[in-house]
Amino acid sequence: MRLIQSSIALTICLVSCIASTEAKSSSIKQRPTLTFTRNVITDLRGGASKKKGRTASLYSNSSTKKSTKTATGKKKVQAHKEEKKSAVSDTFSKYKAILPLTRVYITMVGAVTLLGLVLGDELSQGLLALDPIRVMYGLELWRPFTAACFLGPPSIGWLMNAYYLFEYGSSLERAFGTAQHLLFLLVQISFLSVFSAFFGQPFFAQSVITSMLHVLSRSMPNQQVKWLIFTVPYWTLPYGLMASDVLQAGNAAAALPHVMGILSGHLYFFHKKVWPKMDGGEDWLVPPAFLTKVVEGGEKSKAKDSISTALKMRKKGKGKKLGS
Image (cartoon, rainbow, N blue to C red; front, top):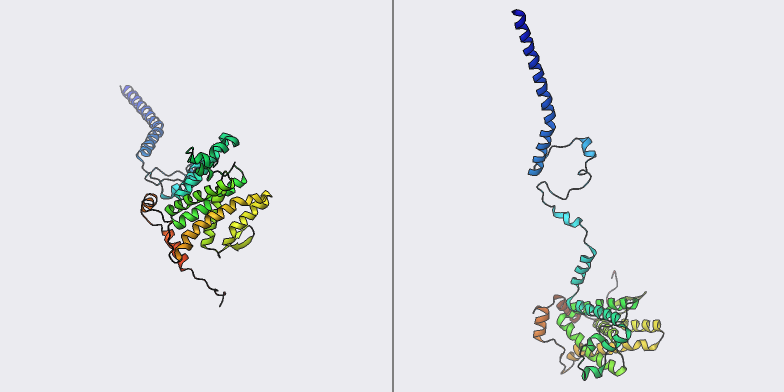
């Protein structure tokens, strides 16, 4: 009887040992699954995870890249500075930064140039060139404006003239205001249309550029400016450009557009700046109030006031030497 009881007790002990061994092995196998599930839940909640060891960080991609987000998941304040702007958006932003009337003029120059490429030389001459007979009797009123915008086919000279148009046009518009600059352009187109009809010039965009430069140079005639490798007074710059065009073309006829621009620009400058200072003189080249309100919104340009004040307060003197 004792032998039977001892065998039963031994059997129960063996069964309990085997059961405990199987329970331990099953808990070891389930531990990675529980750890993985806990990490997934932590990531989904956005909480902090356990730090990895030094060996794991060597092979992790997150340690080699600089994070652009904070611990809460928001984007850092200076993260947008590290992103590169596309070339199209950068060009468009620079285009929008140009002063309004100068931007319109440059856009018209580009549109007329593209239209001239599409139509060809013969058709563009017939459609875009200044023709006084068609303007007066055919009411083709766009011809003075297209004649003032056509700079010829794309070339190095075209790029230089477009740059001069942007530079001088922006300077005038910044100095005198958008409304006054619009009046200046209308006066130049009127004068140059008459001159071009008299001299037989189909286009006069180069003359408009020269008239802009002449008005700027007469406003500050003695200011020293750089031209090529020379330092010359500002008032000589239109004549220097005329001389360079004549030398490049090898023909004295290349000076005619510059002469026309200097004449039309001087007519504007005389009636705007010289004639009002004479006895009985009056400045009649003033934009109407409604035009100023529409173009400038009724607000005076600060740059216009500051430059005009500087020109009025400018005094002539011998100056002083350095160190005296």
